[in-house]
Length: 404
Ligand SMILES: Cc1cc2nc3c(=O)[nH]c(=O)nc-3n(C[C@H](O)[C@H](O)[C@H](O)COP(=O)(O)OP(=O)(O)OC[C@H]3O[C@@H](n4cnc5c(N)ncnc54)[C@H](O)[C@@H]3O)c2cc1C
Image 1: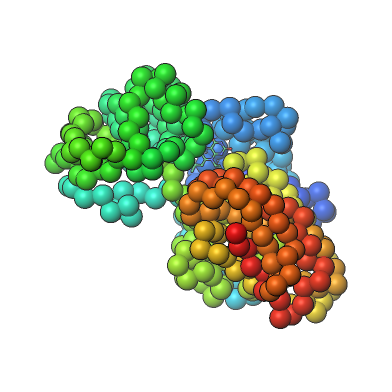
Image 2: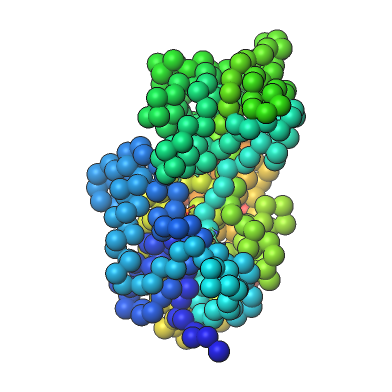
């Protein structure tokens, strides 16, 4: 039988590397990290803009340099097996993995799932038209340009108006390419309002409230048809189309496993310690809340790593779980259940996202009792933290409802 590890971490991105660092600091020996890419570091490896590092090293750093630094904090202490994909999760900490060594089974007392996010590609957005070459995501664009030194096209159109959409303009510029336009269905940019000014200063047309109706071209993208905010049908010549953002978690493993998960999204059920429905499994990083910034995921990874280290030492205690129920304005809450036991912290932070704009009060209730109330200005895709929720009086029949 193969060796049993105390902890195996799936995914060596910022969250997985941070959890590993916390385990090392807590004195846990022989932790294994599994990473399907050829190199550890996760998404920041192919980000060349200085939006990383402030919380970790107190200075702005390009993603690739930041990824190298957080990798160095761990690679001399624990084995990181790259080019290794986890293909199934089984009860009690049993993993199937695939690599050039073939299929193997590994065992661990705790498994931390830190598999990150993916962007919503064209087919999932139901954009019609033929299937020419030149349609990609912002993540793929970064990999083409920075890792493979390839140009995906000369006159691309960017779809979306999240932060990552504007970072795509920057990525293209670094390769000497100017985007023709940035198009989004929303009437206001999902990122900050000023971001459209940045796009225009970079010579990129901005069309908000616009719907792509067709991608034209047989071999390669030749143009797109779209309906602008005034309802006018238009055609724009371009040779590539970059779908950006609309992040979803990398849930393939969860959906096919025994772990309880949300039926619509596949997001695992997990408590404030990251613990899933099988106590051998923990979840952390962007897969639990698509999508926060790299530094934020790193801080969270440190926190969950400490909880996992404690769980290896702790005696099993009697606990109960309280579900988190969402008003329809809310899209997700992380965590989605709350664990209560004698050792639990009395205060909870919820990380939530909204489906639509909301400016006003948010309340967290246990049946009729208000546990938290505060005014928030909420925009879709933005991280909203509800801090300091008093959970000390929750009982086994409590229901934590987030409402407006
Ligand atoms: C295109 C894009 C641009 C971004 N730009 C910025 C930015 O400018 N600034 C910023 O702060 N944040 C940015 N982010 C967000 C940032 O990358 C994330 O916050 C951070 O990488 C999340 O860390 P993570 O460890 O949760 O996930 P990831 O970084 O995604 O790491 C997950 C790792 O798990 C591995 N993995 C997945 N499934 C398996 C499996 N089955 N077996 C083995 N390994 C597996 C993946 O290969 C990956 O390395 C961006 C994200 C994207 C997608």
